[in-house]
Length: 220
Image (tube, rainbow, N blue to C red; front, side, top):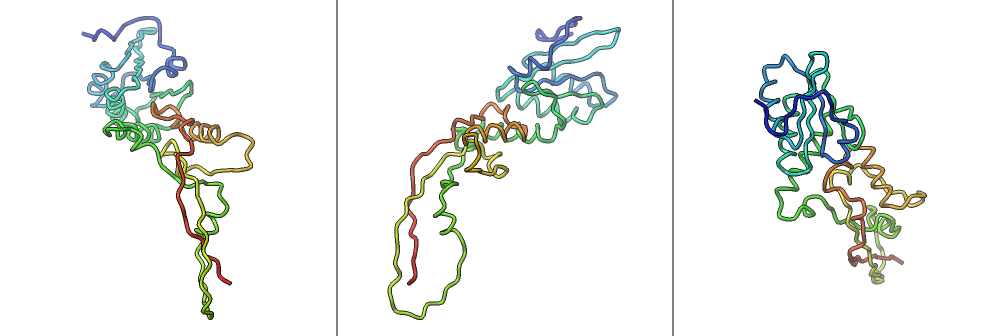
């Protein structure tokens, strides 16, 4: 017998529209896998679950909600079902071509949910990526001095920024001459990498939060 959120109906969930309000939407049919009953039981407990009968063939549609429990449920389901023939995953109105990155992003989200403050997991504080002086200071150099003249030093203030997504940070390249603002570049890259649907992702979290002082040395 089905749960309250499970229906036998001739009306299907529209996975494209539903995926805008859900973490993920997965559409699948019966599999010969020995794990099918386990996966089906997991799917039945999701935020929304529908069984649709068309010409005697049942198709299952499951909407996983954007909460910790349903995210964990989605991981458990995909561990069983991701490799099955005919499984379709939808996110933000798009058909996702690979489940690998979906699982990566959900696992990252679940880690954040285990933290007292999700920002401690998600966000990274970085130096101003457009500061030319920082690039010079960070470069490696070797010099041999044959003078007793003291080294001239100068203190330089380096702005510090919050980058919104640790998952995205190592895959993102800053472009100072890009016509779009930094926030929009970050959001576009998240779309490109397929992590923009993470419930914690917010490109507008990019902001200056302070500065730090570094010492630059000059040699005469």
